[in-house]
Amino acid sequence: MSATPKVSGGAGDLSGLTGAAPIRRAGMRDLSALTGVAAGGRRHTAAAARRDDADDDATHTRHRTTPVALHGMSETPEHDDATPGTPETTAAGGRGKAIGALVYFSSASENTARFVAGLKLGEAGINVYRIPLKPNAPMLNVREPYVIMVPTYGGGDARKAVPPQVKRFLNHAGNRAWIRGVIASGNTNFGTAYGAAGDIIAAKCRVPYLYRFELMGTREDSRKVRDGLVKFFTK
Image 1 (tube, rainbow, N blue to C red):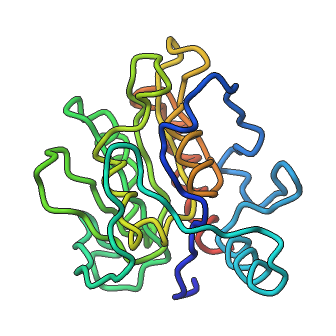
Image 2: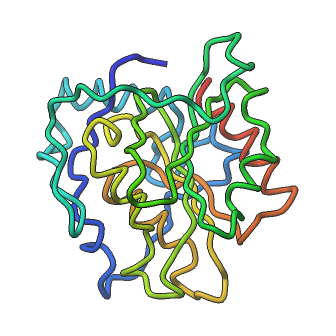
């Protein structure tokens, strides 16, 4: 895994993606098959992300703009002197080097937290960080490549799909620079807004929407996410 952060050019006001435009999920793939070619011919793996960075620098084929603040908040200055946070769960109990990280947010229902706990990612060499639930809690700072997992809020209103705590986390340029992909949970009763938080984050941060699952997920969801994350960070 490269130590150089990926600049997520174009990450902007999340509310700007939640208008009348239809939700598109052409690039979303089953995590168990991430070594294949996704929509548009891109391989959605960590190695592919590094190649994309190199291609951008060499050919300037993708225009990079200065990220702007998420809705209702101020952009954190690019100067980054933040102290990296401590993982909730460390890879191999802190005895080995992590292959990557999962950052997640869980509401008071703890559905997402229970799903993450069942993945046992520490045993797979993946650090796990949790975005604080309380809005006045200290900012979580992550300075290693990560996939973010979020529940979808809003009760079917895509304009409110991304939890405000997640917006705050991604508003920090230092945090946003290391995002590599997104996984989202949701409720199929929300119709086209099912898992919409993943669509919004993926589009704004220019990362692949890797997987979505309903509520607390199933054993099959757990298997696909765990195995897929290992493949994503090692291929």
